[in-house]
Image (spheres, rainbow, N blue to C red):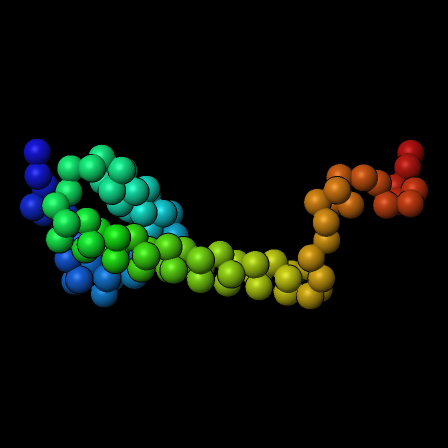
Length: 92
């Protein structure tokens, strides 16, 4: 059950996927690698593609984190602080 229409071709790399698509493809790459059904050459090519996808996703996450920092005034607030009321902030 090969799907020749979608491959790990380098041409795929030129089209920058969205984060969700890249993550979904990375999950497929991991599944293929874990299946143990790849030849050595296929495993190496698949591993290379997985690394490229992981780097892309990491950069996207870092960019999103930077945007959050800007939105939060350059300071990331701990999640626990956001869940607790700030020193009698708005009572009834």
